[in-house]
Amino acid sequence: MTLLLKNARFLDWEKLSFTDTHILVEEGVNGKLFFTPKSVPDIEVSEVLDCQGKIVTKSFAVGHHHIYSALATGMPAPAKNPENFYEILKYIWWTLDKALDKEMIEASALATAVACAKAGSTFVIDHHASPNAIDGSLETIANAFEKVGVGHLLCYEVTDRDGREKAEQGLHETEHYLKKHQGLVGLHASFTVGDETMKKAVDLVEKFRSGLHIHVAEDRYDQDQALVQYGRRVLERLNDYGMLDQSKTLLVHGLHLSNHERKLFRESKAFMAENMESNLNNGVGVFNGNGLGSRIMLGTDGMHSDMIRSAQQAYFAGQSFETIGFEETYHRFRNVHRYLKENRFEGDGENNLVVLDYRGRTPVTEDNILGHFIFGWDASRVQHVISDGRLILKDSIMQTVDEAEVMTFAQEQAQRLWSRMKG
Image (tube, rainbow, N blue to C red; front, side, top):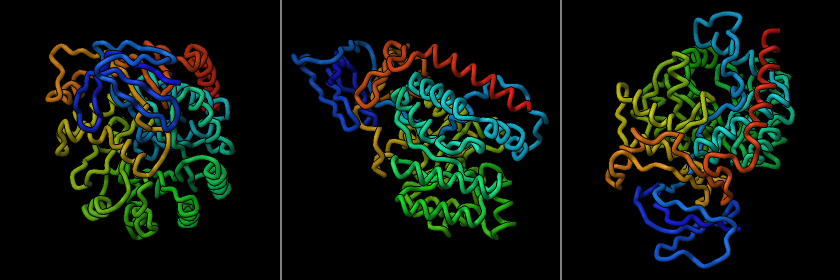
């Protein structure tokens, strides 16, 4: 099947150049785009979208997400008011993830995938945790994302914080999933992962030619515990296991790094995912990319599913803490595509597109497009979304699932989750 986008103003996501053209979009994971600037092609197509006055460009992707937090919005306050980052984990997120069951996970994944699509993202890298519902959790998430039409790169968060049996279950879930799907090997963070579990996770990385997806130095506590338990800092520990030599390895947060660790990362093959709003929300500090090199991407950390918002916050908050301009912000915003392409992950091909109903109060040109990206674009401008050549959002309405049914299901499961958390 082929989709036709008539009268498009196509923005090349890498060159930031505009072309006025008609676009034929081929369906499929490896589908192509065909540009016909002079005339509308006289061929049979599955659907025609008139994009006169719109901007058509590559859709977005989320570099780090947590679907397991999707049902947290508006939930009751924790039993104890957290006084530090460790207590935020203990009394909020570790309480929530232990209460999840399969239905709640499915609702979380469906709601997240819909939110991503409506904000223009067609691919999500997710880091999941559900200690009392581990088996089959990744398959549940994958099925939900595929139902909506959003590509994915998943992992289960393996950790020793709930004991050896749960850690082994997490490793087993990871191995079982990687036998059939592309994915990563997930670890929570250095301070909850002992050497035995770390070694087993590294063995899975090597067995499946994958990479780690792990939180690093989100709070000083992670570094303090690494020094006490292992006599070296977090990135030094990962480097000793050879995980910085893997281009598929994805490190998340990276706030409290020494100059030596910054050098290790800069000279490594790994990528880093910045999550500015989550860091500000948790009061753990502000990301500083100075000295880390060019392999930084952006995520949402489960705060929301809007990558334009994440990029703008990275720029606004970053002004006081690092050297970051329009170009660097956009580079980080798009680096997730480079990560996926470099490592040959499928589902983020050229036939993933977003149509923005954005005209701007001022002229939009190649010279000032990044100014519009930072100060003008927002998720409300997303009109159509195409994933693997398939129209999944048309005129802001989901085409693959009934959004109202998804939200009703999510609300029902949220109430069940909150009730369990109180118990």
